Image (cartoon, rainbow, N blue to C red; front, side, top):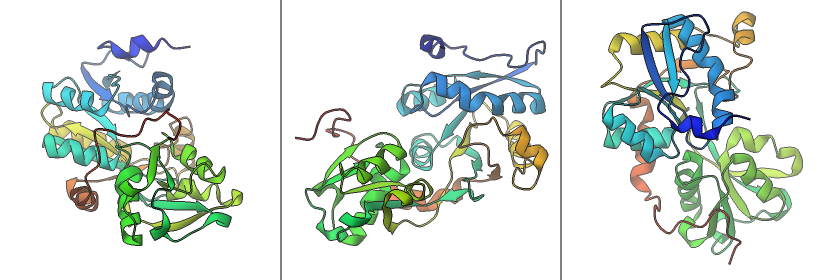
Length: 293
């Protein structure tokens, strides 16, 4: 088992390719919602590929939360981060040098996805009948969490704040909570919801397409030339069209292995608009582990 403490010291992964020593180093911050062991398993194959292509070493700078990533962007100790659409928009609003490099494709091949409100087939009810009812969410900074679910419920005639909402963590946890009857409704990624259709999970509302998870560069520490090299190295991989690329990426993390496409800040306008219309509670959030009152 990996020692989690090692992931919190400045140098985590350096010189990923034994026997090679490159002149440059890029410091990478993965999703803070993942544990250190998952970080290594999900990201190391991609970083090994980029290390070879760009002739650069990588360090993984493990962060425990998004505020820590923001602080590291500010003080110049992180060059790259892997972020969802909402965390990226939040970071960009406070730190304009944060720049998306690529958006990673979903299993269907698109570099975008939708969020859904789901219910169990036999327990469906109108969205305007969810006041005081249990609603399962992923995490506060998950795009399909409070943000998208609040919009979808509002369009259906209910305020999310008026429900008994609670955060469960992962999208699969939300789906299972609805299937088991622990929540009347839930908000999660549409393509994950479809994986539970055979258990009776149905989508009752779906968001507009939103841009995919992104590799985000710190323009204060990453040159335009290096940013373009990163973009080209990832975009050129076409696992849906090339067996060689598919084999190369087979060990990449589930959220990284389907390829990527170039993206820029303007592509996140829809998320920015949604974020401007919904205030996500930052204080007094429901306890993730406490039983329902």
